[in-house]
Image 1 (cartoon, rainbow, N blue to C red):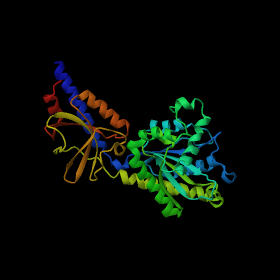
Image 2: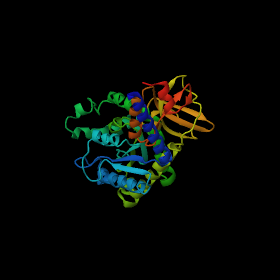
Image 3: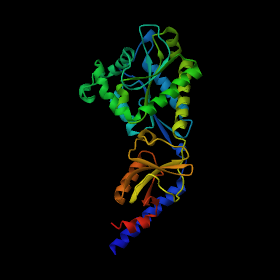
Image 4: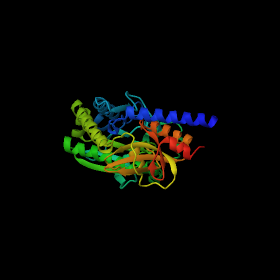
Length: 362
């Protein structure tokens, strides 16, 4: 009696999930894309003061301008690490992005140099290729000296020591390709739309990027120490143009990685699975093949796919335990796959949940 009741409840649960999924199936590329915009420095940390300007004020205006433009698109959700002149430590900036399950983190800065250097550049986390990149990262990382207990908070990281950077790189390695992809869109926008000098995409050890668990880019919008560029960046026109250029690049980046959709229930052969009975979480499908990298699927691992005709279906995890499958389903929904469903298979073919429980009564 208890077994029959339990089986009935499971069937009802599956039908509810299936009904809601088919009723509310939406285009994956129309899902909300969360961007965390980080205006560097702030409060007691003014940033660089090239030609008497305040980096903290300039980057805040650019950051707010980017957000204002993106918020006009209902498919974007914008979160700021600061919206006013206040100090936010580097660890907290990353935590804001992680708590939001952000799809992209960008940190806005202005550069400085003893020469008359100029031009906009973008950085992703990586080993310093040269002394110049180390000096840029050292300047941005030195803000931790304004924080209490920074040695414990940042695991003994020393901005003065190039060897400390090696520990930074490992944590962001999983997202490196997508970080470079996003940075390239931004850099290309600077060059094509604003005719800025191309300082290219570089890698360096920025601690603000270390603790983020998503594609992350640090942008040096230009040199305040250059008389003409500093004047441009401090102007309303310059800040508006930079904001628009970055916002346009982010829109293009989103289009490039989210060109896929979720489709209704159908039977088909699963090409890459063993001959047994199990449950997977279907998280997305579409005509475009996405490499099974966690950065393409909001940080999820244990990924697989199947193909029928021109369509691909993407799955997360694999278990023969229904309760465990529900846990996986909840996690997939929490990271943004709101239309994810539990899918049963047997001998490489999709089956009904009724058949799954018949085969696996426990």
